[in-house]
Image (cartoon, rainbow, N blue to C red; front, top):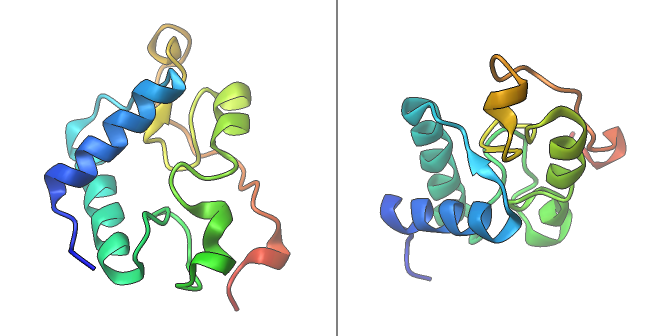
Length: 113
């Protein structure tokens, strides 16, 4: 498996946002850390696993938290942002002052021990 570069990972993130009709957080330092976390996880596990959540390290057990996670759309619909704060609703900056922590939707029985 070829390792992903930061540029490839950033391209992935931007492509997801465009495809879903979302925007990215405008804090470049913040999204840089998230993109780096996604890159590290891809190179470690072979898939873009959410950098904000603990992982089992297997595609089967982590399929719900592969970026964009299964919870992203519901989080964006309700809170204007995904759990990480990477992806935002298109009108986020018109309706929100800042990125806030939001409740975790992932069921506790799916958390790694």
